Image (cartoon, rainbow, N blue to C red):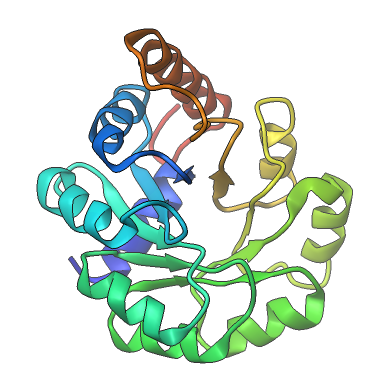
Length: 215
């Protein structure tokens, strides 16, 4: 699929579930539980075990139902490897312009991390599709302040977004949300009970915000 289609799917579904540290053999079950709860976009962080193999496997098995991307991408070589494995979007914790350029050249969606207004504007001017405001744990007030002078730049708060504040971030102008440990805890044993609770938590996140085309 083209990068534009991937971008549309992220903007429509809004929640990107971050899988960090989940054991490779458990990822398909975790992905299925998230899908059952309404999640359609998954980020596999590259500092997870066998991340590229996991991305490749998920893309083949569930790529028609889930938008699979790579996170914690630190440089252009990692971006290229992740895209070759099937990642349709690339998320970074910080601003690295070569990573943005390689991602766009490969027709994948670029979501670099930034924190200051200068970093956000630099990322956007170099072709980023969405800017990941990280860490969002500083609070929605800071995010709202950024949106004031930069209303034209699509922002995705990540790191600190939870069920208590996700609606506030959307009201402040967030176009999407990166949700990590508040949704998927990679330290947990993946039991039937955990998967049941994961689906319920995913459903609560999905229902906490209006989606495009959803009343």
